Image (cartoon, rainbow, N blue to C red; front, side):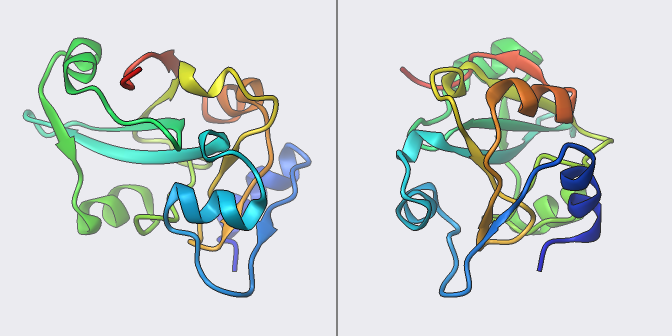
Length: 152
C-alpha cells in the first residue's frame, strides 16, 4: 500500500503509481522486468551518509553505479551507503522502497543519467511499486539538484 505522504504528492502532481500484486521489485533489474522498461529507466534512490554524519539522497539510473570520487567532489566528504536502519529512520522507507517524494530534511540530488529517458520510474514507497514520471518532473517534485555522480 502506498504511504499517505506519497499519495499526497502523487495527487498534487496528477501521477499514478504502478503497484504490483505478485512479488516485490527491490532491485532495478527486478523493477524493470515487472514494468517492462529498460533498467536505466528505474530511478533508484540511494541514501548516503558522509563521514561527518550528513545524509543525502541520490536518485539515478538503475543501470549505473556510484562513483565515490564524484560523490566526494559533490558533497566535500567521503560517503558510504546508509544502513537499512539508517535509511528507514531518515526517509521513512525501507531499502528497495525509497521514494524521493515527500522527503524534506535531506538534500536530494538527481543524477544526469536519468536525462536520457522520456519516462523514469522511482519507487512509490513500497518495494512493489513505481511511478512513471519525467526527469524534469522529478526535479520539480523533489526540489532536487542535478548532479553527475555515477560511473560512465
